[in-house]
Length: 382
Image (tube, rainbow, N blue to C red; front, side, top):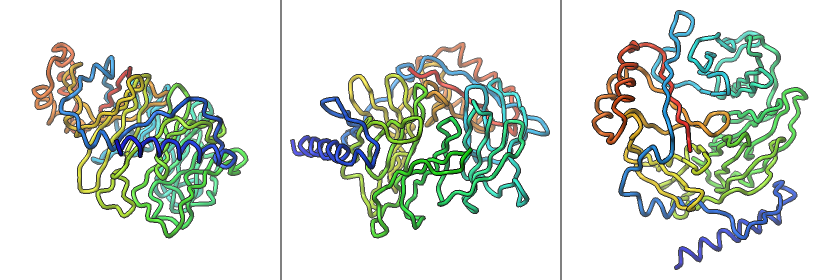
């Protein structure tokens, strides 16, 4: 009963604070009687005791090995920044089409004109045929076209953690680990044409507040941009100018929200489909979990990430997946050597899958070399 009263209190406080700060936050009037709550605290206290069939969340899985040749060898065993657009896959500084064929390298690594030292964040605007690289060391954003022609460099006024393209030449510069910086803002909207900051979302966090491990997240669903704000545990919809348009969901973390970092919980990623919001949950010294919020039943379920799904589609891989350009599709990738190591184990652990699809997946893995580029797999989400 106390938990329900606290939750209602949290909803009312957040709702009225959003209304009273409407001019600052850019919120519209919320017409619903209540705002849906993703109950992380309740789901963590009552972890799911069973695996969920992946067919409940996705209708199909397709696999795509990225072409490996002398010009497209990615190498290494760490994933670089990845962006998937309607027609292309951007893997670090490599550009592939959606058939996996290598097209060209993008960006220029170095210390000369038009070159960057480290790509901390990568964003893509396919309509404008532009590719953006954020280099935190110089607080610069480098702009290239899809033919890898360097267009210009923008000096960002502040440091950030990464960038996100919302289209029409507008980029969000955002932060996640606040304790690393002197300035405290959630994100800023930069127009790449005028090079001006169009909007700043003030965090309300000040230097004396401990906010380590607080994350901000952006994703697309139905060609709209959504934003999880780690400091307020709220999910907003953004308008085309990157301003907060409406409060979408509240996230109840409850006792797992520890400013001192003790038993601290953070959400590591969100993917939204027509029926679900998927998310990963990281707890300091406590492991990795995976969860889903059902939009229809308004129920939240969480389990350990390796016990959440049973792949009843093809018996293959299931990892914490990312969202593509439209939010109706999830994707992940795996190194061939890992695929070869794990396919037998996964095929024995998963149950009730299509044997023919499993054999096709095994053959695909058998045909690639261990040091080939990664295999991408795409989930058609429900």
